Amino acid sequence: MIATRESRLALWQAEHVSALLQERGHTVSLLGMTTRGDQILDRSLSKIGGKGLFVKELESALESGAADIAVHSLKDVPMDLPAGFALACVVQREDPRDALVSPRYESLEALPHGAVVGTSSLRRVVLLRALRPDIRIEPLRGNLDTRLRKLDEGQYDAIVLAAAGLKRLGLESRIRVAFEPDVMLPAAGQGALGIEIRADRTDLITALAPLGHRTDWLATAAERAVSRSMGGSCSMPLAAHARWQPGGSLRINAAWGDPEGTIALIKVAAEAGACDFDAAEALGNQAAALLRAAGAH
Image (cartoon, rainbow, N blue to C red; front, top):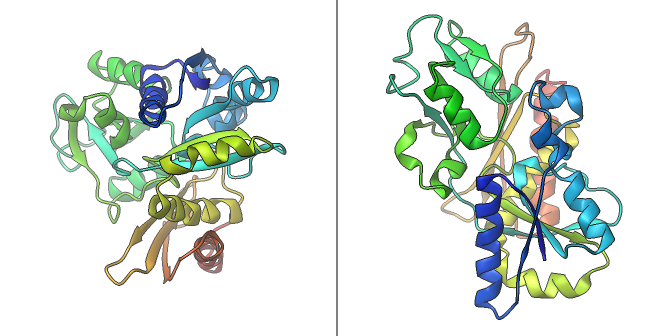
């Protein structure tokens, strides 16, 4: 049994994992659930408890035995799971980039002075301000379909969403621009799916092992280490993205922004071999140290 949020994107993600498991001979069903993060839409996540609000009800289903696994967007998974839970694997990553969606404007540069751009991600806020300090950024909550509806109703000139979600739901045509990471650095784990289990379910670790994508798991482990080391949460404007280099090393870029705008955007990079999770996390910790040394807090 897979515990999942009931948004269209979350159900797609759970059904994707379900199909992978069924291909390997497992019988799978879904347990759809509504989380507090889905219910409270009038306040930013940083003010109501963080991204953990999207996973707590699913973890309760795992704890009670109502579900065996929970499928999450990895960027919504807290950096430190509660005692008794474990991340069993990370499935192959989709496009990690952010995407600009607009019915009228073909790029961020084309937006007029004072244009209204929707996002509730503090990371996106500081990165957008660094690129276009003249635009007006307004909060945007709700599932992907709700956000698109608000855009189409004219509440915003453009919105910024994860490209992965749009692609998974067949909405790639809505993307005006997919920002390259050197322009707008993604969130740690963006585009990846994580499968959570109870830590004592060692039987599931074996069953889920074939679904894990090792290189993507190592890259996201490095990214999450940056966030963990910085005390990252949705109240911290922090970005981290790791990419494998031609020689086999892992390069991680990280950025920290000041929500008040008094400190310029801080960007750092680090590179090393990352043949295992300890090495990947050490690389992430190195990037976090560089951020702190440059003035991030």
